[in-house]
Length: 105
Image 1 (cartoon, rainbow, N blue to C red):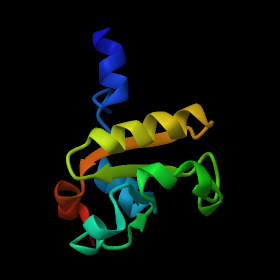
Image 2 (image 1 turned 60 degrees about the vertical axis):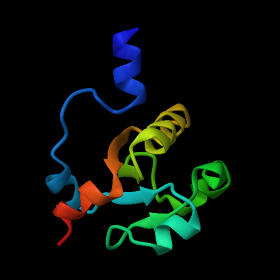
Image 3 (image 1 turned 90 degrees about the vertical axis):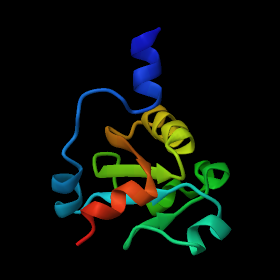
Image 4 (image 1 turned 45 degrees about the horizontal axis):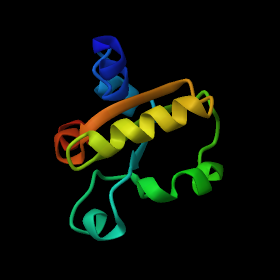
């Protein structure tokens, strides 16, 4: 059960977010448009969680690196799980968008 919770919330093996971002990972911010307009990671794409399933065409490849983020890490954990279930292979829950800002270029 602990391992399942770790997978859901992105608490598995550590990922070098700086390297992923330097290599062009797509950052998907799953907060609402209003939340996103209040601040976001530079270069991120806003796809609210409840609209993710209808916007998969915005993602180039199922093998591209994707980092999900939101306000706290809960919605981005759900987004990660959903994307994994759709066959996306390199998805990481980046947690809070605010914390990801330290990796911006």
